[in-house]
Length: 340
Image 1: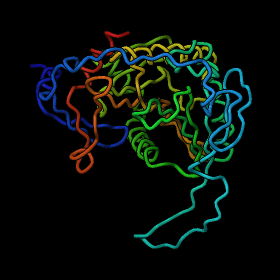
Image 2 (image 1 turned 60 degrees about the vertical axis):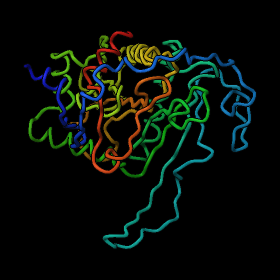
Image 3 (image 1 turned 60 degrees about the horizontal axis):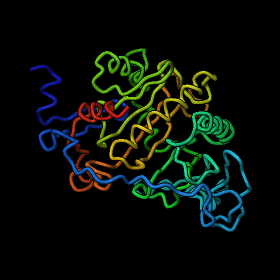
C-alpha cells in the first residue's frame, strides 16, 4: 500500500510544523463524511435593513452610540472592548508562579456592508475588495502603536456571534499572543535550519500532491492542511512570499477578493447552510525584529461535522490530551472540491 492509502485506513498522528503540535487521526471511525444526516436547507433570507440590529446604518448600538448611515464599510471601536489602550495596572512582581503583566490594546468592529441580509459569501467581489482595503488600512494604522493586529471573523451563532449583520473584528495587542508566538518560533526555527520559508516549502508539497488542494487562482490557493484539526478546516495562502497583508499589490487584492467569495460559497454548499466559522489572518508582527521567515496566511476553523446542526466538540481527550479528528483531511478536501 502507498503512504496515502495507509494514512486513509489506519489510525495515526500528524504533526503540525507551524505550531509544533500533533493531532490524532482516526479514519476508521467515519470513513465517509457525507454519510451523515442531510437536512433541509438552513439558508434563510434576512431583510436588507433590520431596525433592531445594532450594526445597521443609523441604528443605536448596544453601547448607546448611533451608527452613521454608512454606504459601504464602517469601522468603530468596540463598545465592550476586551482590551483598553491605556491600562493603569503596574507591572506585578517577579514571582515565577504568579506572574502578571500589563495588557493594552484596541478592539474594533468592521461592518462589511450596510446590507443586513448578506454574508461575505453573498457580497459582490468589489464589495469584498473594499473590506480587504479596510483590513490593510487598519493594520497599518494600528501597527504604529501595537506589534500585533488580529483580523478575524466569528460567523454564526454556533461560533458565539450574536448578530448576523456581516461584520468582523480587529484586535490590536501590546504583546504577541500565544498562537502567534508558537507560529513565529516554529517558522523562525525552520528558516534558520533550512534557509527557506516553512509555508512556502509546505505549499509546494501540497501543489505536487494535490490531495488536499481545493482551489487556486493567479495569486492565491486554498487547501485543507495536512495537520487540520477541525473536520473542514482550511487555509488560504499567497503563492509567492508575502509576509504581511500590507505588502499586497492591487492585483493580489483583486484575486484575494475573488478567491474569498469562491471559498466561502463552497462552505455554504456543504450542508446547504450559511456556514459558521472562525477565520483570521496571520502575518508577520510589526516590531523591531526581523521576520523574513513569515508567510501570510488565513485560517478557517468551521465547527460543523456531519450536518448543519451536528458539530465537532473539542472535549474529553481533546481538552485533556491532544486534538483528534475522524475524517482525514484528504476525505474533507475531496468533498469540498466537489462543491466548487
